[in-house]
Picture 1 (cartoon, one colour):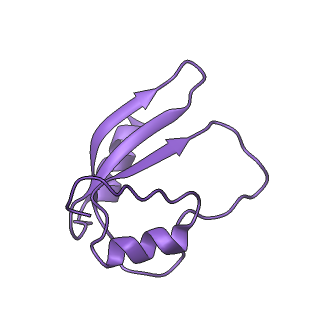
Picture 2 (picture 1 turned 120 degrees about the vertical axis):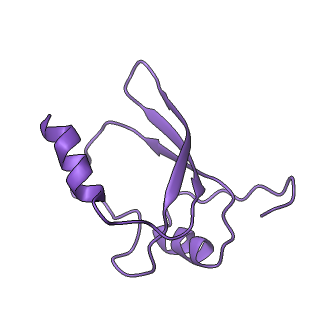
Length: 92
């Protein structure tokens, strides 16, 4: 956090990730999505907890459809109209 080095990697623990976000201890978050469905799976983040906006700073996709997105925390989210705008884009 804030100083170079000392990278912390969290693999699959939404509870720990949420705790780090809540305490402003995340400088950058990389999410890797593999296009495979394995049953019901587990949620990345718990159902409860404060919301956090994220700015997308990098996005890549490989030839197998694996996506890598790099985000930085961006404070509290602005919800007004977000879902409506997304639906317009999705529906065309």
